[in-house]
Structures are given as structure tokens and as C-alpha cells.
Amino acid sequence: MEGQDVTKVVLLACGSFNPITNMHLRMFELARDHLEDTGQYRVVKGIISPVGDGYKKKGLIEACHRLAMVRLATEDSDWITVDAWETLQPEWVETAKVVRHHFDEIFTVEENIDDVDTVKYPKKRRIEENNFEGSSVYKRRDATQLMLLCGADVLESFGIPNLWKQEDIDEIVGRYGLVCITRSGNDPHKFIHQSDTLWKYRKNIHVVPEWVTNEISATQVRRALRRGRSVRYLLPDRVVHYIQENGLYSAESEQKNADVVLAPFQRYTGASSS
Ligand SMILES: Nc1ncnc2c1ncn2[C@@H]1O[C@H](COP(=O)(O)OP(=O)(O)OP(=O)(O)O)[C@@H](O)[C@H]1O
Ligand SMILES: O=C(O)c1ccc[n+]([C@@H]2O[C@H](COP(=O)([O-])O)[C@@H](O)[C@H]2O)c1
Image 1 (cartoon, protein in one colour):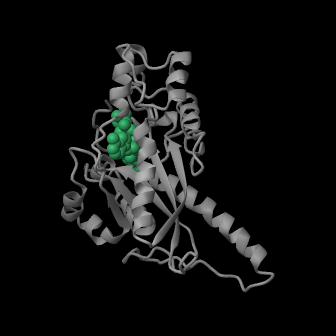
Image 2 (cartoon, rainbow, N blue to C red; image 1 turned 180 degrees about the horizontal axis):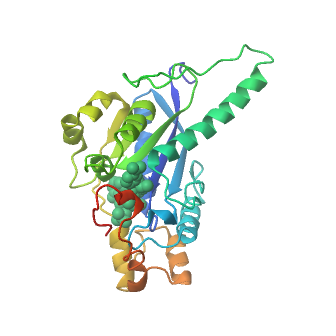
């Protein structure tokens, strides 16, 4: 029987998924094992949220295809799902807003369950902490916690000057929590140590080591496809077939958005989108 102090967790992964790879799916398995090993959490759901076309990153193919591939990739999973809300927004949505949207969805469902329960039990209100200090996110004991799941490159991108808004980092890490999968070339522990913000919220950041070095990246997959090389076993078979049937990822598609001078996420940095 589950202990009183086990917190239910929903994991949310945001990214281009251009295309989804086996490593994206593996991230969820690694994160679930790591969190559940602590005895403090039970992971009840994983959500993949592909970025919309408004992100305008170079080489980003149409959202409908990226979404279809994630659907095929998660078809057999009994806990990892795809959510199209972010993907279908006409403009790029900052990640903090995406996390907030999903939190509100979970909150609404739980409040509705509470409303039904009120007939028998007094209504339990969720009390949000106004400041994000400390590790506990919500005072209501049975509330589901939403955590952002990402690779160490995304965590380290918090340090790129003006790329992320400071208040968004505070909200994501301080209010919700982060699960970060190590990636070769990144040192999340060192990065957390060197950032005052991340150090302050370190109890909300779960760093998950990937012992089997697995450097599948969507960039490498697109490159292989452009060159007519096999990508079998890097991606779920159904995704490989979808790419073949729809003739996705060519030299031409890699030039998509190449003429975009300043993509929305580069609004402050002017950094290259390639
Ligand atoms: N090999 C990997 N190890 C750990 N995390 C990964 C790995 N590949 C992707 N991720 C994480 O998956 C999430 C979504 O990633 P994204 O769609 O940008 O894939 P990507 O392979 O990094 O893409 P690209 O090569 O196009 O930049 C991000 O949080 C990213 O850090
Ligand atoms: O919210 C932000 O300010 C922000 C700034 C840069 C990147 N992001 C998100 O980080 C993810 C990065 O994905 P990718 O494929 O560009 O590595 C994607 O979901 C973006 O929406 C978010």
C-alpha cells in the first residue's frame, strides 16, 4: 500500500521533437525510475509537448508532422502521452506558460474531484506558497506535482544571458520543479552550484544520471536522413516509416526558417538559430 507521503508526479517535456527519438522516450523512463527510487514520488503520467511552428527555429518542420510522429511513438506507452495545446498555438509560447497551462489542467481536474467528494468530506483547498523558498511546492498533501523534464543542455541554457526571463526560471524551478537528464558535454551539478538561483531551488532539481551514454540527438537524425542514411533503431519503427512515407527531412527542409532574422526565442540574444 502506498505511504501517506508519496507525492504523485506528472512529468512534462517541452522541445522541438524534430523528430522524436528513442532518447526522448528513454528520458521519461529514467526520470520515473529515479524519482520512484527515492520512495517520495509516484510518477503517474508523462506529457510530451512539441513546440509550435511559431518557434521558427532553423530546420523545424511543420508542427502537424512532429505531432503525428510523437503520437506514433507514444502509441504503445501506458503512461507517456502527447499534448497538442502548445503545438497548436499560432505564436511561440514561453515554457513557463506551457507549464502553467498544464498545471491548471491538473488543478482543474483535481478540484472537480474535490467538488464531488465534498458531498462526503469537507473540501480540501490547495494553498499555494507565495514565495518559492524551500522544497515543498504545495501545502495540500495529496496534490499532484508537475515537473518539467529536460536534458542538461536545456538546464544550462538558463545561463545564456537574456534567453530565459529570470521570473520564468524562478517559476519553473521554484514553484514546479525540474528533472534533468545528464547529457555528455554538460555538468548539471556544477552548473547548479554556480548559479545562485538554481542553488536556491536545488531541492526542486532532480539530476538523473544516464549511465548508458546515449548521444542520440534530433540534429544527428536529420543529418543522417538528409544523407540517405538509415536511422532505424534511433527512432521508433513507426516514426521511421512515417518519415519515409511523407518524405520528411531533406536539405530543403533544413533551410526552413533560415531567413528568419530573429526568432521569438532569440528576442534578446540575437543568437544563431542553427
Ligand atoms: N541524448 C539526450 N540526453 C538527454 N536529454 C536529451 C537527449 N536528447 C534530447 N534530450 C532532451 O529532450 C528535450 C527535447 O529535446 P529536443 O527536441 O530539442 O531534442 P534534441 O535532440 O536536443 O534536438 P536538436 O538536436 O534538434 O537540438 C530537451 O529537454 C533535450 O535536452
Ligand atoms: O521560455 C523560454 O524563455 C525559452 C527559451 C528558450 C527555449 N525554450 C524552450 O526550450 C525548448 C528547447 O527546444 P530545442 O529543440 O530548441 O532545444 C523548447 O520547448 C523552447 O520552447 C524556452
